[in-house]
Length: 166
Image 1 (cartoon, helix red, strand yellow):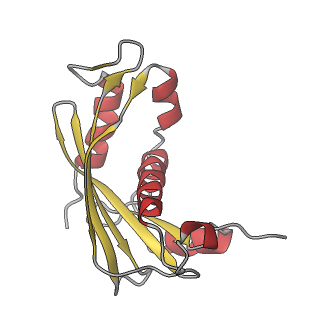
Image 2: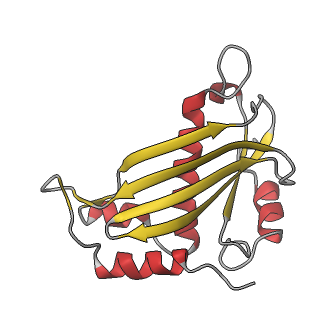
């Protein structure tokens, strides 16, 4: 059987170190990725745009871990586009490495949703990238920012933004 970049063994290992629907004690969701050649530039280092794709995958999977399907929101006409992005590269990630993309919703300010990211080694000893992304709710049909998040979305995101007590 062929393996893909998210093998069952890797997912099981990640699940063993997570709790609370995939969130750790500080509210971080962890998403493991193996670096393949198509993620890299000619030098074998991860191409900068790959980090953005991984961050979006981790954000969507963190929502899914709570039973929230992003595709359902889109089907109902709600988009959550990125309106601000800040990345800091600490170290290069190389082809063949396994990395953990960690994400959590940092805050909700009206219709603005702030998400934090860390890309680390699975043992958390090496920090490769830190980032923050701001999303806003947009009515797809009207093409305008919505004034208030739909109640179901607001309730779901409240579950994400409440950090567990330690």
